[in-house]
Amino acid sequence: RGVHWRHNPAHLPIHAFNVLIVGAGIAGLCMGIRLKEMGIPFEILEKNATVGGTWLENQYPGCAVDTPNHFFSYSFNPNNKWTRHFSQRQEIHRYIEDTFDRYDIRRHVRFGVEVTQAHYDEAAARWRVTFRRADGGEETHSCNALVTAVGQLNRPSIPAIPGLDDFRGPMFHTARWDKSVDLKGKRVAMIGTGASAVQAGPSIAPEVGKLIVFQRTPHWAMNNPNYHKAVSPGNLWCLEHIPYFGKWLRFQLFWAGSDGFHASLQKDPDWPQPEVSLNEANHKMRELITDYVRQELDGDEDLLRKVIPQYPPYGKRMLRDNYWYRMLKRPNVVLETNPVDRITDNAIVVRDGTVHEVDVIILATGFQASKMLAPMDIVGRGGRTIRQAWGDDDPRAYLGITAPGFPNLFMIYGPNTNLAHGGSIIFHHECQVRYICQALREMIEHGYTSLEVRQDVHDAYNHLVDEKCQSMVWTHPGVTSWYKNKQNRVTVTSPWRLLDYWKLTQHFVPEEFRAGKPGHAAM
Ligand code: N01
Image (cartoon, rainbow, N blue to C red):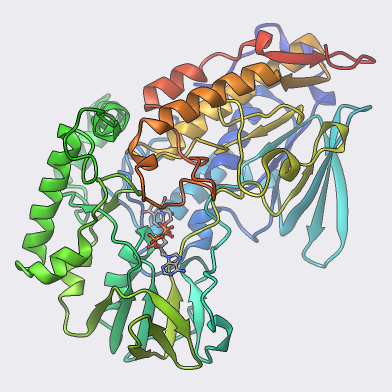
């Protein structure tokens, strides 16, 4: 639901207020739609030539969503025609494009411009946003409020493996897939076994000559009977013709995401086997998945030992099995579990000295998630930069949306808002957008020039987040993941159930902010 004016907007100086949004992906689009409804002038700055963000950039074979589509879509723009429960990238990208057109947001987007710096001008209470054009030139625009909608998973993490640059064949990251490279019959190395690898690997295995998968740590991957299924004609009919059927389906998926898995993520201090599981529900999950994987591997106990993690389920992001285990049984696939030692001009050498000669290397090595808002140089009040406030990889924000020292800056998909336990990130985006719209309404209706979250409110919230994360599976000793920064603090993932976060962000509370009036500093 959108945010409505409490007073007649005709009497408010909305035309003199403007918002800049960075990013024309799912989050930026949602923000644009709501601002348009409120009549607030805005522009979206997008570095790519078209819309879609992560669903544009990730074009590796097999790329798909692993949250059910009837939930992984905007609540206000349901798509009753999804062909699958878990759609392929192309179908999701088409949905994003259609939504841009349906709400006529595309003409608010300036394409091919990359924001390099945003500087808060205290005297004017405005952000000065500098961006680089495709022709190399620079421009600076200013705005009352700046909204970042740049995602968390778009700066590839390139591993610091000795000799990486010596490799003479093609080498690329999954999010920068090089379609000009023909993999047919080639010896291909894939480093990494996370969500990207699990989708890309089984898609290329039938065509390559040999696929060598380099697994550093195994990941848990669960089965979902709907994962490969088309939506049945019966369901399509119901979605089309039965009122509220789609809403009910969405609610069920919301509930499963909100409550369904949450219990199995909590550490039970009395649990007798804390090294392998957390509680009864978590242990059942371990057994269920292990039995499933054993079946998929045709009882190959040696392979089973290699692919079943020691750490509890959900320690890292839970994957959906994309016939990964069946792929490992293929005669042209090798699972290498010895750590990678170095790369030469034509091979990957592992620690026991085995040399794997390869023609192509695919880096399925993930993203620098904790380095949020990078590489933008964000300079807040008093000339303090966001990197000074957060260090290299320690981002914090109130509700994941706003941080002290950075008035009128709002983040979508900011610190501790990623979903790691079922649920749709689009739901979170909608919560954040509604909250931001309320903040902007507060500014416009009261004539505030600035809103800045109070330090004590921010600190208390982050204390709570850290405390909650400590009791959850992600901080289990010895588990590494992109949820955490180098200091092992969970910076990316939300500890809340969907319902909790919905409640937390439902109402903007003015008392939690310092407001600036024209001609006055913030009060
Ligand atoms: O990245 P990852 P991803 N030597 O960080 C390994 C979303 N997503 O791109 O586990 C050897 O999960 C690393 O090993 P380890 C989703 O949120 C969604 O796969 O650190 N290996 C790991 O195996 C997802 O969680 C979908 O020991 C190295 C892998 O590389 C997130 O994006 C699809 C290494 C990285 O896994 C990231 O997934 C795809 C090294 N030096 C992605 N460095 C959907 O389905 C790293 N690794 C919606």
